[in-house]
Length: 257
Image 1 (cartoon, one colour):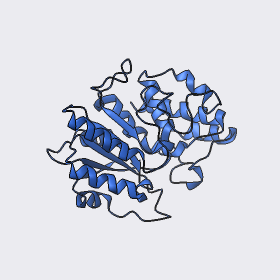
Image 2: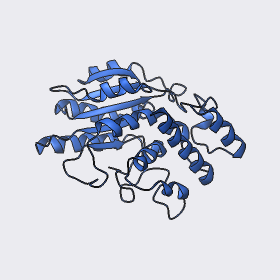
Image 3: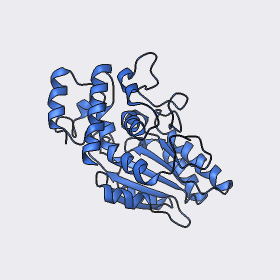
């Protein structure tokens, strides 16, 4: 599994280098979460991506799209050759995911604070329809500064959406601008079941994703490192939105673990 994730990170790095575009560090901070979700939890068939009984995943943190693209391609939703054309005019893979172009993408996201409310609406609709499908959403800690996140959290709690799980990629990217506080306690105060985990530990991720309350939505606060796996990018704000040049690419490929 470790080798597989390294392989996918190499795919991301080389595609971003060629395109001169991409939020690589954000993608790396969520890679472990996405892999565990798609590899062992999410019930969705790449051959039937629109099956009405599927589980749903909303990448509200749309700029981490490279991580989602890599996992979707590995799971057979589309050919990895699409990475060769990343962010080109006629490419289906853009800087943010487009549900009208990419198989397996549940919603077009990127405007922060919007994807999570869509996930709440989907969870409510499934519950009203008496479907057993689960809904997962992933936001960033900076995104948690958006008011729509907390409005949606209140709505989910009010309607007892126990089919909904929110994952917060707490990579501390917002710390320099605005402290977000104790997110575990905040979601509990909003009526959620809430846990904090190591967002790079696959056993902890898997255990948390299986949690389901009888009456409450679940929030998973995943402590992560932005740019995880390479010393050049880890915790370095300069890599928030930056593609490597040839020299940087060679250095990062050697560092990658």
